[in-house]
Image 1 (spheres, rainbow, N blue to C red):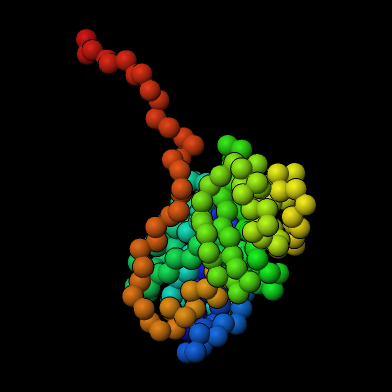
Image 2 (tube, rainbow, N blue to C red):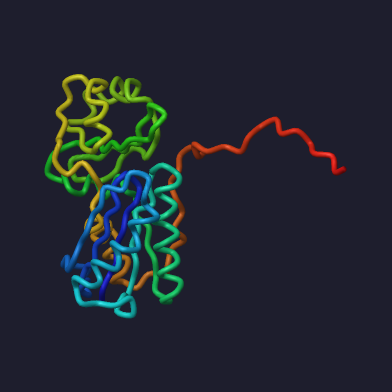
Length: 227
């Protein structure tokens, strides 16, 4: 089975095509990532086209879709989720959601007790805490960096993620791992692989926004009286 995975929860769009064995083992066939900024909608479809072409595959070959569901800023996250849900619906294949922070932490499973952190804007960060075995034990949540740094002293051995690098001063002497600071689509696929291999029903891809979107409708609009 071919599993297409994607994540757009950060300023980086990442897509991977993975071969999935019946026992849930995965083999990466192609992957691609772009620094998106605010161009998630422009970049995600070409990235999908590219990984399919690199693996000499077509959409008709796909057996399942996996998508990072955040947490992440509203617009970028929504682009990936809508894309994944649309592909799954159009092809009649199941879609599975994965917490994007879980995919970030999965790249650092041998690093002890982890805190995975990404930027939430508004001087806040998204985070989740993981035990020595890589299991999530707290979060995801959104918090101010200084508040989280104070709460996590003695609770974690290492910080991972672009948010930890950006707000390093808030975490004192906790070690920050600067490699692999973004979620990888191949790890989104790995975390969904067992569900896909078992043929579990498609899931509703519900985004983890954790707060209201930055854009708000204007308040105090004056009524208009027709002439």
